[in-house]
Length: 119
Length: 112
Image (cartoon, rainbow over the protein chains, first blue to last red):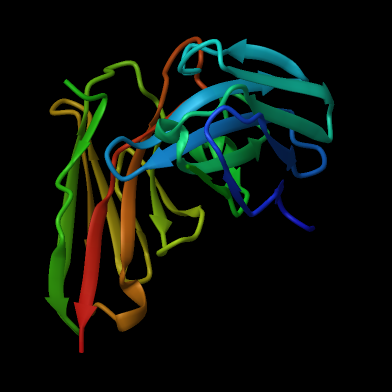
């Protein structure tokens, strides 16, 4: 299995530009999560999907952030316009949760992340 | 109060020593507990789940105290390869059980 795939791995952009991050979850996983990690705040959940439907977007910082999951094998996180404070590592993770089962059923598998720098 | 709190460290420990980390969580409805490991500039990966009765995986032992809402991780006979950041993780509990909340991590460095 290829694992969770993210692209690009690194992105450097200027303030005001649009940024699109991409994620391909593990085949068969029905949950997809977008996280942001910074030194100050650690790993924060931005939004997650179940069967391509957004379930909880309460972690999305503001309207400049949007996420879509058009099908089971692809999701995007878009920032428009980008700002320097958006600089962080953005992780995508996927899982399949059976509910009521042992804790291992909750394991999330992370992609390698996209390191975003907004100048 | 943060949902999951950990001592950020760093813990600098000589090779072969035993080291323990604790973490506290605020959501009493949480049902699943984990320790993830994150190497420098890498993604987090599951180290081990934490069961109510405590569990062991080789040199690693995890404990859960539901009454006090804390989780611990013990590493025995530490190796240089154990150097990493250890993330305490709990699930949402109830509706939103699939959500995981991560602590900010405890950085461990094993010294030769």
